[in-house]
Length: 319
Image (cartoon, rainbow, N blue to C red; front, top):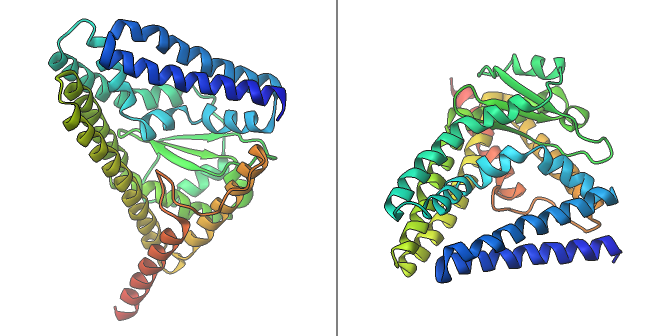
């Protein structure tokens, strides 16, 4: 292991240690004493980031390309409850737990509605005639689109939407290098499926309401009930995310009609190329198509798409 890798491992370890201590002191000792540990979390992860930045390793470049450009995704789609939790913790220093709950829910909702547009408005606009052309064939007009440039030697293939009012469509440049027009259209139809189904809105509101509830129950001394609420929240959140991915896949396959199987080809390319990129960046072998906290396995998604294509084809023949 190289010196900078050891230093990074120590920094990350200290970051998680400070995070755990901050939680323990906040809930069990004195909230004010958790502040130094919170600062320690920030310092530790800043050191880790600085190490990878100065090393210019493939792993750092991958992290920068993925998380540096996907900051909004991390907070809005994956950790939508982090903002109301942060607001609840700060407001609890000055208000009662009940008032803190209301403030955190309102603040979290406001952040969820405003932040995506502020964030993507700050990104440099990169003209993309190819993206504009593909979007013309979609059953939804994206008035806000962003293309994110990705290093050619570390292709990260992804597309996502953010916001509920005039949602923003974001596509990485690698998509145009490895997918043909029909495959790219299928992927973007998947994102339209998320918009039409209001999936992001549902997930965010769910997190905004449940995370402060968990903190409120802890402050009121109902630790066991809070633990049950937390487990219910995590389990339901994972289930909803998997469900919405399947629904978006089905929407894309249905819109593609007889060409619905193209969605399968696009997914297989996405999983395959992203697997190679991660393996190359971190020097580890990544298994292709495994289920994650946010997405079902590739096999499950392919199976559901095949069913949808078969149903669409059968329906067209009977008409």
